[in-house]
Image 1 (spheres, rainbow, N blue to C red):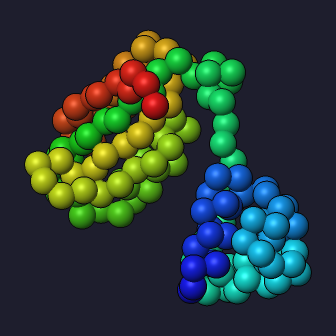
Image 2: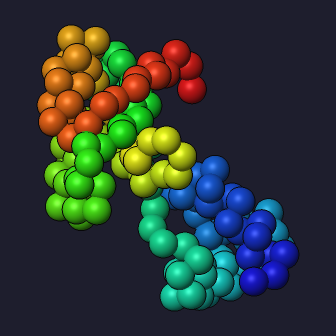
Amino acid sequence: MDGLDKKILEMLKINARESFANIGKNVGLSAPAIGKRVRQLEDDGVIEGYALKVNHEKLGIETKAYITLVMHQGLSGRPNVLDKIREMEEVQSCDRITGDDCLCVLGYFKNNKHLIAFLEKMSQYGATKTSIILEV
């Protein structure tokens, strides 16, 4: 990967739908040359996919929170527990972490009442600590 690839990646991070022609104008290459480089970055696993940015407030999401979980004894080694948590519709990401906590969950909720119901579901797996996101 060279400097041109890094510039291409920076532009795609800002707008994953940017045209190859526009990227080419900015880095001094033709659209087909940009396409070839992007396909190579995809083939090499540097680009793993493209994401959609959603305005969650317009979908009725009022509350976002980070929730850490200290799992009950004996549950932390069970992969199916982690899968069950990751499959919950509110969970945007779920990471195993080091330290006193076992997991860090990013969740999106319609409102605080919805968050409370989610925390009650999570209590079957262990003790939670919640930090509500005020601003991104």
